[in-house]
Length: 469
Ligand code: ATP
Ligand code: MG
Image: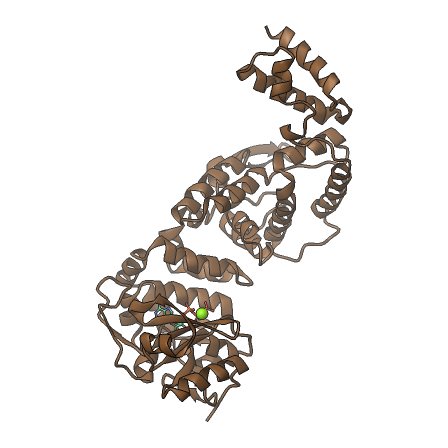
């Protein structure tokens, strides 16, 4: 019988279960990942001990999901989720089983799980594998298959088809053919649409963290799930942008998806920004006919998307709000999208670089650069050459910014050598005009940092006030 190596912490945990007459098994994603030769991201345990019994035999147990028989055991510096063996029946709301029974066996417990690869248990006592649904075979052939009839299992819980697609992208597995076709059934599609935005978002976030999000997102498009949850993105299919200038070879949807692949995997803000950065192009598209070559009398089409970054940013705000992302994420992502068309030339003055820093905000600059590189990747889906003109410009701009930051010049109103009170003391009345004058002083200092001295600024303020009375 096949077995896996049980980590020291879990063997020690098992000694306590065993001493009290209970059995415990590692189950779900941890077993799957170990069988795949990967490190498990977290440990889920299934046991015949009831929550109240676990609370007695371990020191620190938090009742995290008591209705489903789940507790979190804090043990030797780890947090381990432990759930009592359970079987389930009836899913009238498509998510919560109507009945959870705790007098279940290990086999019952495994049979309620979603996919064969997730329905394998390993005894904590000796690591021996219990695999009633041949999950190991499916893992070997890289196949995702439901435990039992796919239609029934998908109709019980509309999240499962999305999980299937998420796992397929994350693990580079195929969804078994009939299982995949089942996802497209109208009744299953209806069930999928009924899941909560939060549950969808959690899976969507896991897709964004996978190596190539485009893989799962393409499958989501093919199954109609993208259209159901993010129609704005699905609608970018066939929005063509390739013209004779050769910048783009993909339509807007594929370009967005591949840009997302090209964004740093661990940076959710940049991945989201890349995924949605051109989503407003459809609204901004203008086709211009130009004579090419000049004087030839023959005309070619040139495609423009002036101002698309504003449409993209607005649409993204709607999408992320609907998907219930935190406000901080929404504002960072929409800001990057709004700024993603920045255009730097080496002949920029220092004042222009300072204005760029004010507009973008110093803490967002590196993310904006990462978004530009992702955008370049998404144009042809190939490794970005460091000698690429766009990349070279980023290197140069980064150096210019470093230089400016080392001089500690004023980059916000707070850094000015005068504040509102100083102006009031100098005789300028409080009110709207005061704000205007402060802003003018700031622009003046951005142009010439040497102006950032109290005396000089009060003189300028006096001049502006006199001119505007
Ligand atoms: P990962 O943690 O890497 O995302 P996982 O397989 O551990 O993958 P979890 O969401 O942590 O996924 O769930 C743990 C286990 O619970 C799964 O392996 C599966 O056995 C079971 N499970 C989770 N969600 C469902 C569901 N919607 N329907 C049936 N079983 C589920
Ligand atoms: Mg897990």
